[in-house]
Length: 82
Image (cartoon, rainbow, N blue to C red; front, side, top):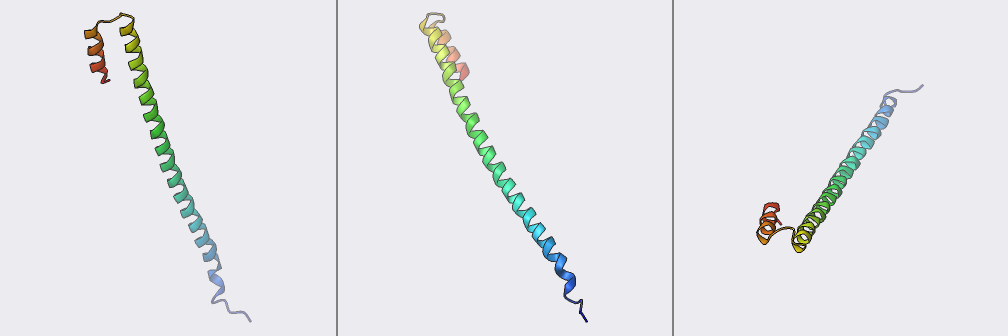
């Protein structure tokens, strides 16, 4: 004859394992999201710097060709925060 006092808890092991798997997946997703946001922020910052450099370069070229006066050049540099 078999006693069923301990046999009913077997499904709890499966449920506990499933819960642990869910927790590990959530931790992995959180790490991935943080890493993706950090990388995205670095790319935006790098793009901003190159855009500023290009803007400065265009102003310098226009000034060198005589297309704007010294006052215009200084005013545009100040307005653009360069």
